[in-house]
View 1: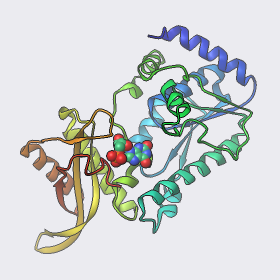
View 2 (view 1 turned 60 degrees about the vertical axis):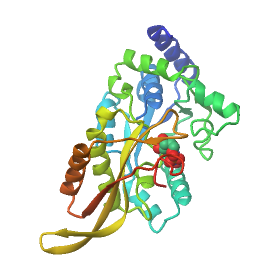
View 3 (view 1 turned 60 degrees about the horizontal axis):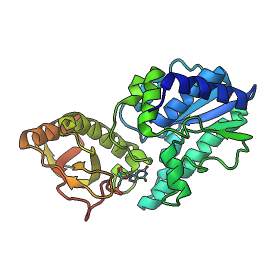
Length: 305
Ligand code: XMP
């Protein structure tokens, strides 16, 4: 285990030495790794660091407000309200892989613009030890390693937590008073709610998915799932008052897994499922029905796209 206080001292000294009087920028995701890297860099160089958080409009409920609160001590924090640009870029896109590409490209564009405006010379990244091992071993290319801007010319890349394992990063987070980012959260896909909306991503569908995911996370917490969420999977007929309506079908999914490679759909009691159904249909009059997904992985994937 790492001696957190000593690590913080050494890491900040190293950042100060590397960056000097120059400027640095970091993309904050809300995850523990980038949060710790940002907090360390901020301690080291203060407002010479610009943390950038891009709100894609596809984040969890309350995520942006949470980021503002957690990092309220950083005066240089930039929250980029990019929802409109993401939804515009996604208009008409229905292929799941194309959605991922569009989102990845738009993210880079947003971040590059901010980096250019701040005239940052250094890029700070929250790469941790397992990320480096996986990338070097060619298992997968991790987005933290060499993935971000290659258009903006940085003088150098600073990776203050590059030698730490996840549990060590959490320990350092606690020592930095970042309790709110330490909690074990369920994995949330990089493209966010876009892969929890089947077909074209619209604001309306993203809003339905966001609220429904929030309900499901709350209601199924006691089942301790690997992931529990909801997705907008299509449209179907329902009745509201005396009228037949064509509303959204929301699928609820809760799975157990060790690593996400395979997964088992969880058995949930009927009362809980009914409570979820009633909260989701009650929160949005355009939701016509709620279904529970009983499929394991394989044959299904965890996400819908
Ligand atoms: P699937 O749906 O392939 O998901 O069974 C396995 C795990 O990966 C997550 N996932 C993603 N994570 N970018 C990510 O960062 C993606 O495009 C992506 N697609 C799926 C999913 O949430 C699950 O934990």
